[in-house]
Amino acid sequence: VTKTKRRYQEYEVTAELAAEIEQRSRESGTYGKLARSIAPEIFGMEDVKKALLLQLVGASTRRMGDGMKIRGDLHMCLMGDPGVAKSQLLKHVARLAPRGVYTTGKGSSGVGLTASVLKDQFTGELVLEGGALVLADQGVCCIDEFDKMRPEDRVAIHEAMEQQTISVAKA
Image (tube, rainbow, N blue to C red; front, top):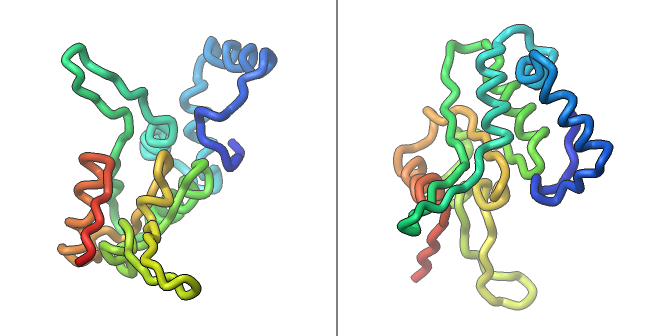
């Protein structure tokens, strides 16, 4: 598995690539092979790697007959004992995803995750600076040590996770 800095929708599927995908889809064990290719230096944890693979590929967004939209983006919470390579798996996924961002909850504020309003030093105008969630739009944002975040900072990401929007209020 290799990374290219493009969105999934921008990949050009050549006839050769389409034929290879079709061939591999008929082979048994492709799902396991792809999962094992995520952080191959970490032994075992195949179920976790399969979940991370599903996180990377996501699902399609669906529109229902009544106009309701069901998003295909997945949220995942990875928990476990200390020292079982959770952080290394997150870092690997962030490097692998086309728009992957890795950050820690310990050093992140709600503004650092969403967006902040700053004064441009050259023009003096107010500008928005995107945080980790904005930078990972249509990609993967890995927040390590989520439990060490302050509760008020955790609240800041609820809107981004539920509505896939970020509101900025500046008085």
